[in-house]
Image 1 (spheres, rainbow, N blue to C red):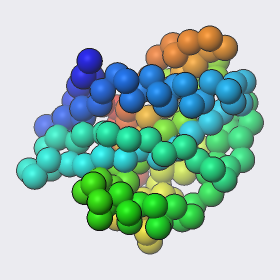
Image 2 (image 1 turned 120 degrees about the horizontal axis):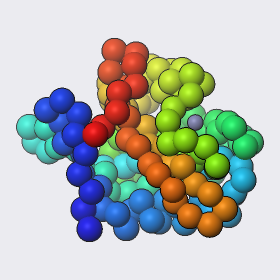
Image 3 (image 1 turned 45 degrees about the vertical axis):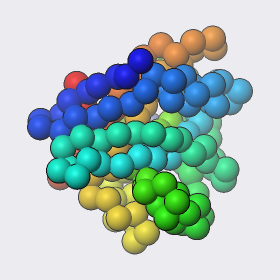
Length: 154
Ligand SMILES: [Zn+2]
């Protein structure tokens, strides 16, 4: 099944099987947070964003309330995805174990600094937050960074 969300005149499209596999990759880290990268592409008119893959973070620090991934180390992997599949970095995802599917001030600041990273060529990165329990994906929200604010895809 395809999940569609909207922000202003932008459309975000993601398959529920990708969300399921993201959730599955994070379960083993419960009750700590876990996360990774969202990979996909925009349509030619830049109105539709297709999220197509996830890459889990290999180097990171995490606790029950925080997740920080190492920056930059996947540059080579990103280049390969672009050359072979035309896909590129779209944004980030992480879990909130037993928490809300809403961003914290730390999350906002992290997204602002990510948008300023030299090797991230995207002005409006997406943040996916998954609210998880010990045995289920409870809720999730997609946000877009716009003018240093995170706004929700509804
Ligand atoms: Zn968070």
